[in-house]
Length: 88
Image (cartoon, rainbow, N blue to C red):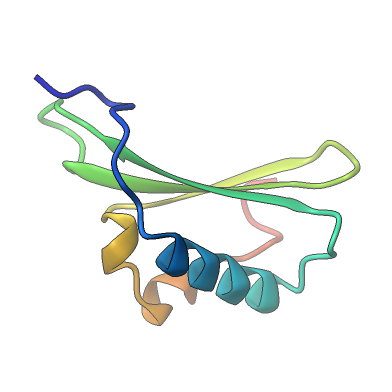
């Protein structure tokens, strides 16, 4: 049985490219921490895969976005809805 945090072999190039796109879109400063995690969900009311994007600012602010698909299926259109002013 697989769990929510089971480690997968993520493609580093896809993650690096995704981080670059997010950094450019949101105009994030260099000292901002950006993390991307893919989770599995086995509950009936959630998607089977979900990507969580987290931005942590030097001011200790944290913003999270959720995209209901695995990392390798995220397209530019999915990133279009990311807004640095939302979820604060």
